[in-house]
Amino acid sequence: KAGVTQTPRYLIKTRGQQVTLSCSPISGHRSVSWYQQTPGQGLQFLFEYFSETQRNKGNFPGRFSGRQFSNSRSEMNVSTLELGDSALYLCASSLGAPSTDTQYFGPGTRLTVL
Amino acid sequence: AQSVTQLDSQVPVFEEAPVELRCNYSSSVSVYLFWYVQYPNQGLQLLLKYLSGSTLVKGINGFEAEFNKSQTSFHLRKPSVHISDTAEYFCAGLPTGAAGNKLTFGGGTRVLVKP
Image 1 (cartoon, chains in turn brown, orange):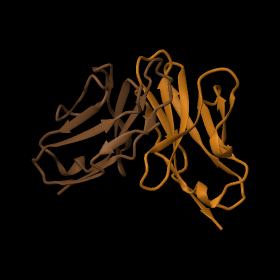
Image 2: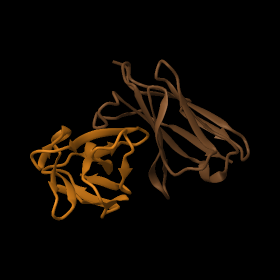
Image 3: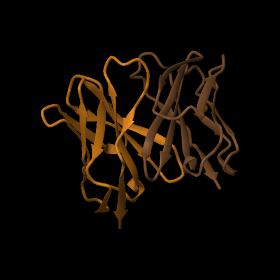
Image 4: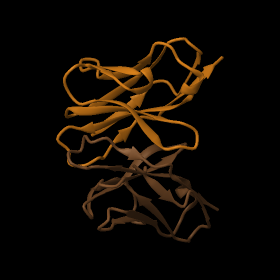
């Protein structure tokens, strides 16, 4: 079975631009979660989608948004990029119900904001 | 509110020596607990998880962890490490009964295995 894939793997943007990151979960998984990893703040939960609905949301500003499609693929969007948005963005998928199903992480997208 | 604290940011250890990575949690409700490993330039991989039952949990790659409710701890141990265990390790918690996968992570512990 193919693992979680994230595209692109690396991205360089400038302040003020917007960016869209993509995540394809493991086949059959209905839950997709997004996390931001930075040296200063560590791993922080962004949001989770389950069956195309946002089920949980972390404490991030509205510039961060996401969605999930009917095939469970998910995208996250960051608008009006700031320098502090530079991070590794990790996507994880799971069967989703119950919540204790193991989450499988992708390799991440490394975003650099200049 | 929930928090997870990893008490050591870095742990150097010699090959074939034992290692213990400490994790403490704070939560107003019961939690499920997890340990993940992150190798350089990779995502996270689940090592083990505690949901209920036996407090000693065995995971992959020879790792095990013990849940201690009275001390609110979930320390990770391996009796003999290999060079390949060099990585960053994360402890995480999830409130029981919560809908969804909103994990709270500790700050991570970098393990450097020396020959």
